[in-house]
Image 1: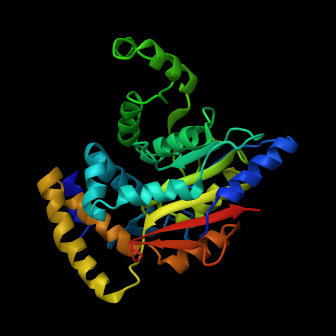
Image 2: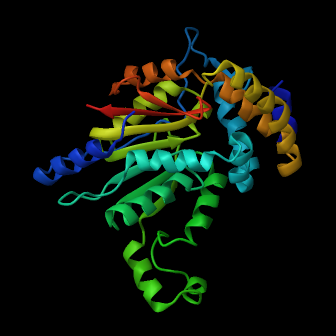
Length: 333
């Protein structure tokens, strides 16, 4: 895996919005279609009938090859994914994720219905667990559900394993878990059971997710790895219900030049070295840094979201830590 990659690499709060959505749904029941989210995108043929090229880090590769290469990267880092994010964000990604979820404020409101949430490229369940915790703890909502999709089975495998130590695991507890929890905890687990599920899907197609079926679509630190981002955004628009929210947390462009110089030095000189020391995988970390550089800046990505049919408020994004990361939000009219 490493040798192959080495050859290639060289807004405002959403509380009123989700509240109004639930209020509307409590007054009238509308037919629900289904949901689809964009993750990778099936490349459109070029003028000669051949597939085109896209970037994999700083290199251009055939579109059909990028999916394989990205898959190898995330299979390699799946077991050390949280450590990887700690290295790449100086540990601040945990605060960003907490802020991301609090901004969205997911959960059923009084008189409303539970939410259907689609977390795309969410393999390890990091964002999904946070959203379910928020819904339960803040809104006393024990019915909102999250479908976690990822194109990489290894990442989903990590999420499934983590779910077994939470109250959100599918179905009843296993015999092993029954031996570890008390009766009252088991009762609470049964209330919370089956609120999270994991499904291997190419987010560009999400052929198992119907149109107009999701209240909230989230993607955190994943969309920059998609082969065709515009196609992925169109797919996200398709699967959301009218009034549904698209929310993306992603590394972005630092907006303070002096700090950017320091950050770039850290990114290209320290992070790959840390990848080698921590995970014995310098190449994957090198790709991840290069993928950040190739991702559009905040304004460009916000316009891409609008081009996909979403409405945005103000600039459409919120910078975090001087732009190292940004939250982008769009609403399906």
